Image (cartoon, helix red, strand yellow):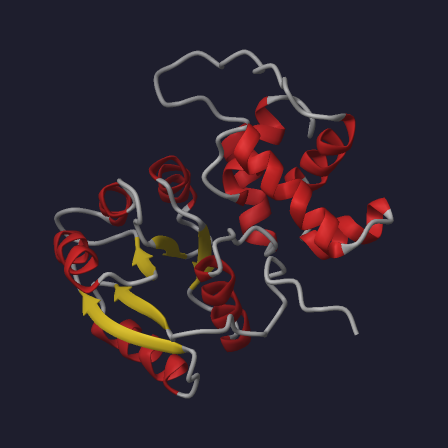
Length: 235
C-alpha cells in the first residue's frame, strides 16, 4: 500500500514524533472550549494555551512556542490579521490557521497577505479540523476545502486596496514539468491528486512541489497557489 500523503488534507494520519502543540485564539470562550474538547481525544494534538485577544495571542505564541495557532479574525483590539502578521514573522514561527466564517472574506484576504497557512470554517466537521491541523503542522498549507479555493481565487484576482492591478509576473527558472505541477497546485490539487493526473508517484509530485517552493521562494503551498494565479497559469 502506498504511504499516506501528508500534504493531502483528507489524510487522517498524524505525523510521527511529539504531539502537535496548538494555541487556540478566539474571543468567545465557548468556541475555545469546543475546540479544546474536539482535540482532547487525539493523542497527537496538545492544546498548550488559549487567548481571547490578538495581543495575548502574540505574547503566548512567543512564550509557549506552539506549532500551530488557530486564529480567529474578529476580536477586540488587535484583530487576528495583525496578530497573524506578528506571529508568523521571523524564523521558526508557528503556522497559523485562520478561524473564519463564510462572510469573512475580506478578513481572509488580509490573512493571506499576513502569512496564514490555511483556513478553518467554524462549522467544519471534526475530522476536517483535525486533518487541517496535522497538514499545517507537517509544513504544508491547507488549500483543498472548497471555501479556501474560492477565497484564494478571489484573492489572487484582487489588487491591494488603493492600488492598480499588478501586471502578471513572469515565471522563470522552472522546468516544463514544474509548470504543470504549479498549475495543478493552483487548481487546488493535493500531491496525491497531482500524481494521478500526471501519472507519476506521490513522492515525485511532492519533490516537484518542494523544488517549486525553493525556486520561487514561497513560504508554503498557499503562496504557490497565489503565484499560479499571478503568473497566469490558472485563469
